[in-house]
Image 1: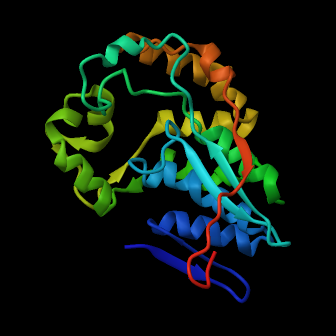
Image 2: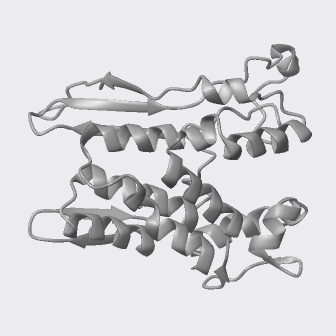
Image 3: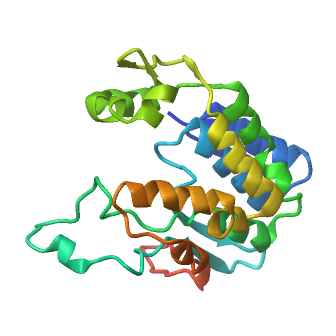
Length: 241
């Protein structure tokens, strides 16, 4: 179920009320659709982390006022030291473990969104998200379902379990969870931009944690990441494009 808000000249819908509210506030403060999208996306990284997290990627279609449609692709590459032979004999790409982990593109994608047409200050897009991470946000029905579906696996991870589990069970829908480490991460990106992840202390900690888990990812992999802006692919369908 999505949540929608609208005004006299704008509308926004997201899968979480907190993100919708953050985007609506951006509009009310004189922001553009890019500001609203950015505020909402960063907030979803806290309130809806299973679908829109800092460690994920970002794709967006942006229509300019002249009708031009741009595609933002901020999907990360595999580590330069990745060994293709790790996939030998597999019928499909594994979805767990260190092998499928790529460079996170979300932060660079957020910057691309901001540079493409936002008018409000960069750091302001993080205010709601940092507050929710530090002070707490209610577990959504969707997040609870994801945790419950793989409760044994997620519960065995000390980091996830400390935030999202109560004893040995996933936190109930509506339970308030606090994420102080995520608040610090988002605060660093707000203060220093994506470089906090792609070459700063956040990236150093990210790489150290993943390398300890068996990933070959390196800080140089993060530093090499760039979001790309391309002309969107288009195709006619009846009277639509």
